[in-house]
Image 1 (cartoon, rainbow, N blue to C red):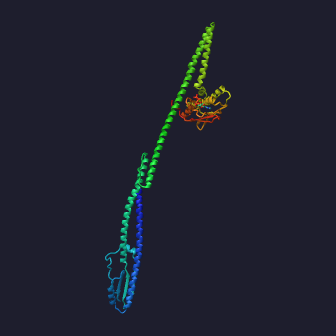
Image 2: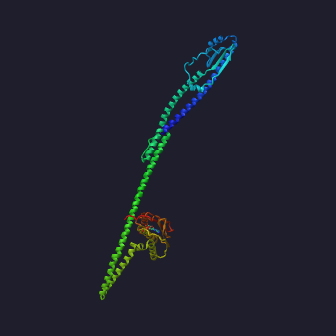
Length: 452
Ligand SMILES: Nc1ncnc2c1ncn2[C@@H]1O[C@H](COP(=O)(O)OP(=O)(O)OP(=O)(O)O)[C@@H](O)[C@H]1O
Ligand SMILES: [Mg+2]
């Protein structure tokens, strides 16, 4: 049921209750006033007739009848004169006031007082009976009530028409607001309301428009955020794929170097040995062959040194934790004055290749940075599994990071961060001048391999 109908019904019911109360009060009043009128008038009639009979005590019944005929009807009283035999000698005439009409029985029943009858003995066996008769007073009450009802009904109709129109005008703006809300519910956030009539409705309309604007700009911001999150995710996937590709190329290169170049350098050394055997007498030739052999050996050694850098063999054969331990040992041998500490917890299941190589490269870069830039006396490397993620920490007690460490042409810190993010994790660096630098990385272990 609409608000307009509800309000209208409420006002109609209230008006009806008002009218009903008025009618009830009126009926109560009428009942009292009729009662009072009838009592007063029958008392007057009794007094009058008693006095008359006293004065004309010598008169015969016919004289009294004659007198009564002359008196006519006394309002609200029926008067009957009986002789000694009980015959009616006189009966007061029917009322002429509003003759032929009477109030409905139910109304008379409500307002009519109990009829009173008084009998006066008048000597010589005669008797005068006076009976109260309220039908005229009741009819007056009924006529007044009809008038009152007529006015009340006209008022009722007028009030209802006015209320219907006024409430309709007052409610229309709210119906407009409701329509706006429904449109929003259906997902149309472009909806705006015109200036609405009335102070409250106007304020609500303005608030509605502000709300719609706020929702719209919020949605826009969310859409943009979702778009940039999707772009970021795509970039990370691409970075992950690039790293995977680079590692694959490095692995292939390491294999080629080891298998092809290694074989060929070995062949050169064998050839050099054969030449040396044949040119035993030729000192110059012998020297040249020795130089060739030495160069081939150097080539072989540098090829061997290069292979593990391209693809840390320990990573494939020993797993991440031991490969990291190997890496730290390597730096321990190559540096002096630095104490290396490790806390490398066994990982349980070995992580997938992408996580393994990513984590290894991050430790490699963080260690290399600490040694090259920090001038530390102590470096600590920790690897553990925490809450389903690989947690890596490389901390030094060196000079700390400069104010803007990530600058153009430097790729180490950026590369570490990108690697961690491409694997769905993140990197944090804590550092203050003179207090060293701590690199913390988290990489979730439960993740799909990045596409190649
Ligand atoms: N552990 C550290 N202690 C102090 N300074 C550091 C540390 N790690 C990095 N830095 C500073 O941050 C800068 C950026 O490091 P980043 O690894 O990005 O580049 P880089 O090591 O200089 O070059 P590369 O691209 O070869 O890694 C470094 O030049 C160095 O000044
Ligand atoms: Mg670096």
